[in-house]
Amino acid sequence: MYIPAHFAETRSEELHRIIREYPLGVLVTHGDDGLDADHIPMELDAEAGPHGTLMGHVARANTIWQRCPTGTQVMVVFRGADAYISPNWYPSKHETHRQVPTWNYEVVHAHGTITVHDDERFARRVVARLTRRHEATEPKPWKMGDSAPEVINEMLQKIVGFEIAITSLVGKVKLSQNKEMRDRHSAANTLALRGHDELARAMRDAP
Image 1 (cartoon, rainbow, N blue to C red):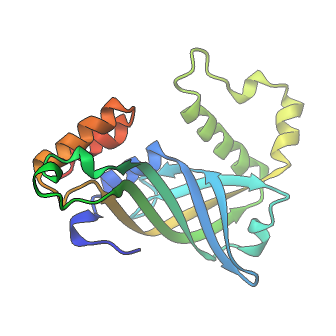
Image 2 (cartoon, one colour; image 1 turned 90 degrees about the vertical axis):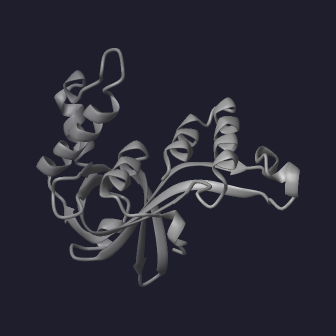
């Protein structure tokens, strides 16, 4: 990934934040048939290992757990907030007419080693953690105990768990850091008016 110095994000807390807030990862693998990508919601354990560990599960029918056995090197892409930026939103554009359209975004590439867990206990733990996290804002959070035990047991037999020990995190946050502060804030304000609150906040808070 091409990363100009002013767009590089190296703070682990920020990289972990993007992963937590946008947990649908793109698991990129390379096998005998070439490159492949699977879109999988993942749970981050930031305390497990020097860079954290990702956990998730796939359908047993998805052959990725067979094509990428334990020890396989993989990459997971997490895309954060993003939006189109019009040059008309920059005050300086109307003075110099030297601005052009662009796209602002946050992205994290997590490189690591996958471990496949084809056992019911691990799968149950992953499902419980994912459910607990994503049901937390519901008025009455759903939990596995809400379903009949035989239903849950049957579903768990149809999935395979995995974890990815992260060996490195590469982050890029393109937030108009290369623009004048008045241009950046003007663009952020326009984004906020159009409902892109997360990206607007990130642009205002960028160093």
